[in-house]
Length: 216
Image (cartoon, rainbow, N blue to C red; front, side, top):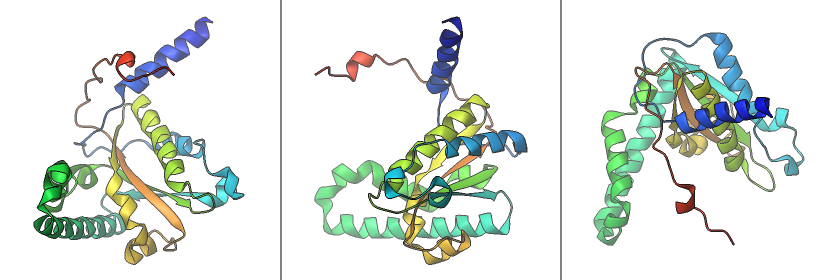
């Protein structure tokens, strides 16, 4: 019982410490730690009902800082974000009644279009998980599980983690997918940045579980 209690205490501490890192240092995490974090993604649930094995359904691309591939991927992503920001601006001009509902998203995407994604500029590794689509198509859910595993593993290893959720919209971008050596239309993708944080975030504030749960 004591062993289980200690494990749960450590696990809960990791969960409560999980935060988004937005500013990274220029340090590079050691290779063994990164392998452990990437390995955790392989133990996340996947769409076994499709009849496709994990080896043939999930693949991971690791883009290192200051490489031609990383630079190209960042530019393609930023270009797509800018295009989405322009489209959103036009939509809101013709449908101003949507502005109140979409104000937060508009502010965020406009900021990203103008300034880029700080973590993507400085973080050591831009990691993209690709999940082959099948039937039933639950690739996005599977990727989310893999990302959560890596996030918790990175937190346990005192590394910073930032979701780059805009990566998901690049699955239809031919140049981006070619860069990853993946076929357009066959995969869902999402990404994150992992690196050494410039400063460690404070743990999340305590939450009262009863505020969120309704027992039926």
